[in-house]
Image (tube, rainbow, N blue to C red; front, side):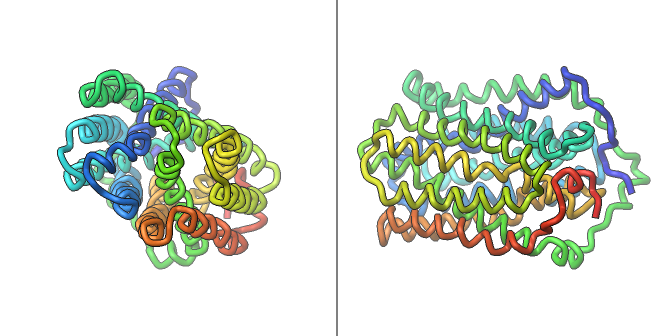
Length: 398
């Protein structure tokens, strides 16, 4: 059975538009992190509720991705990625700017996440089908464009807040609207499946669990540690006396070094296979987090630890995505949704629990718990196919 997105070689102009759209799209869900200390004061909430935001956001950005992916597999067409980008940009920017309370902001954040869930599975499947050879390196290259959005988003939102307050933050919806317009012209080439073909796609969930259970546990534990540490980072920075104006730069360092780690990890996995990359990424990120927890102050050692953590934790990003697609050949939209969806959502809600630990035991203990989750994730990694390279994974070989 064929994928909903047929194989074809993309032009440079298409690839550029996809990269810009991905960068813009991926920046929106991370906007609130740079303003988190300010939001905690504005709406009077603590670390556990900060962690809950990550879980609630994951419900729509992550948990719904398998459903959106299957829908995209069955229908095709440009509306998932174009409409998703519009919803995500408007929802996230306006909600962050004008929401009057924590509860309303959380609801709008989830609404904006629906757009992210619609965008990612179909876009990832489109990219996977539009490249020839070196799947790990090509997919990591596409993921880098999203990480550029992660880098620019915290810098942009801090600058917008300092420059124009709520109106400045609301204006950040404009890049998404413009990018969606550019993307529509390119995405019109995505075929919509004839109605008679749409009923053919069926999912045997027992087979899905049998083939992917160890992988899902790995994704859940990895994201539990990652989401918890990303939530705690601006809080710890604020507690240690760091300047608000540098919060965006701190997160930009995480994503900048993460971008480098992603590229190197994807390329290395083409040569050495996924297992050593996954293990090295998890252990390196865990050790860096422990170093940050045991340190003090906000000097150069703190920045170095944050940079090492960002590099290590993102080194396995492309490996996870392409390997997840390999578990379900012919269902790339669904596979992308499962890879970035169910396991990530379980992990993100774990950030709520780690936030409770931060409230009751302190942020140092909470960081150590999150680092432990990253280290424990090595265990299911040992069950993930050792001999399968990302190149063969991307081609759908079993």
